[in-house]
Image 1 (tube, one colour):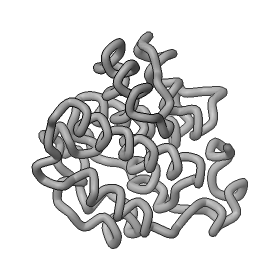
Image 2: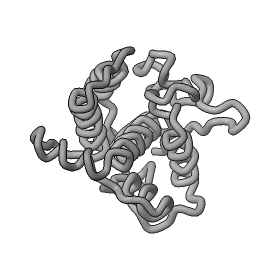
Image 3: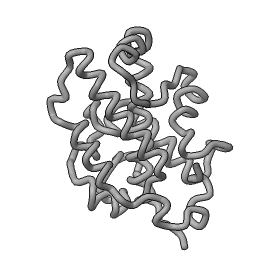
Image 4: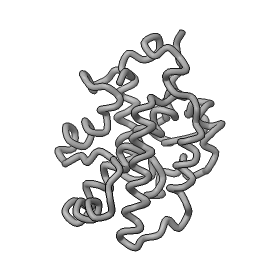
Length: 186
């Protein structure tokens, strides 16, 4: 059994026509395909770069020796030489300290996790459970950071992404992963 993978045309960018049918059917909001909206998974510079790197990962180009669940850390630390902050639940005081010392790196880590999670679904139509959990935690941290910093999610993207992600039920355990993606193991 093989899974069809969908890759974007570099001249067009993210598009419904070059996305897995599972992604198109479930993630219906236009912002999922918006290359210019910083809050969209692929709209920031980080998100766009991650999607291209993820396509290379699935095409077995250049990215060797890492698992998909380690992909966000690999991109941030090994490729960009920055500090990766894995998303996790934190109390308000701990989050405030982390944000005060590393705000940009934390935002970047969150964006990379989201682009990786939504990118896996966009390309393969499935998501590994560990990555789904990481994206859930990244969205939670983004919402908490907005609250902490007094920012608004004016378009409700975080809630929409969280709902869409949590209701998406096509995880890699619903297919036999070693038959479709040797690189997806946790």
